[in-house]
Every structure is written in structure tokens, then in C-alpha cells.
Length: 153
Image 1 (cartoon, rainbow, N blue to C red):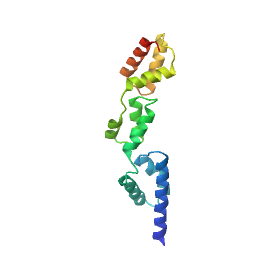
Image 2 (image 1 turned 60 degrees about the vertical axis):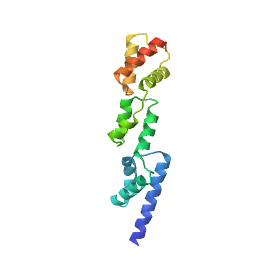
Image 3 (image 1 turned 45 degrees about the vertical axis):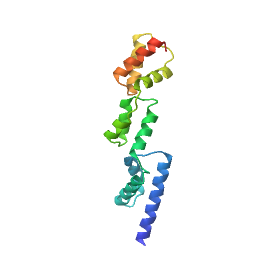
Image 4 (image 1 turned 180 degrees about the horizontal axis):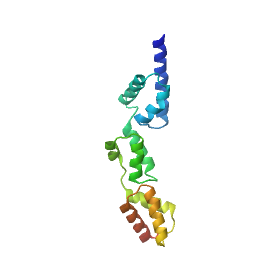
């Protein structure tokens, strides 16, 4: 009787995990924290997560690529790395999925936020702080502001 209840719990846990994964990709750490209150035991949960990973239903790489792509519209590489690290993605994987084209992204963000080029030192400093808060490097910020001022946007 207890074995049947345990197998029902595993089926329910697997269904819950698949529902979560259907909505969006998750890291192992995220999925484990969301499912742990519903798991009968930690061995049950670890077995389920291992099975999902083996069947490629749970993929840290897919999560990292998708998350980096989403965040790259608004943020720089440093902010994206910080976010991925906080979600439990390995350093090796973070280095592999870091988005390229940081200067172009910084310029695009500046153009969306500010229609006119900076005319005073204060405006330029404000834009630098804005981009710095978004996780762009100083070199990227400097070049993006320089290119935006030269092009007139």
C-alpha cells in the first residue's frame, strides 16, 4: 500500500516538473527548489531530476542560452553573467553562452532611451551611469556614447 502511494507521488511530481518545464526552461537548482516541497523524499526528487536530464527534458544549456538571449535586449554581459550565476548555471556554461555584439546592444539601448545626443557633461554622465547599471563595461559605454554623439542620435 505504501509503495503504491509512493509511486503515485512520483507520477504527480513528474507531471508537476513537466508542467513547469513546458512553461519555460529551468535550471536544475530552480526545479529542485520548486519541487522539493512536493517530493516525498530527496532521493525521489534526485532520481526524477536525473531522469529528466537524461531524457534531455531538463537542460542547463538551453536555459542559459534562452535566458542570455532574453536579457541581452536590455542588459550587458556583466549583468547577464550575474543573473545566470544566481540561477545556478556553471561558470563554464556562462562563458560559452555570453552574447556577442555588446557595443551594438549598448547603442541600441541608448537610442531607444534617449532620442537626442548628450549635450552636457551631466547628460553624458547620466547616460554612462544608466549603461553601467545595465551591466555594460566602461570601454563599451565610452564607445557607444562616442558613436551615438558622432551619428547625432
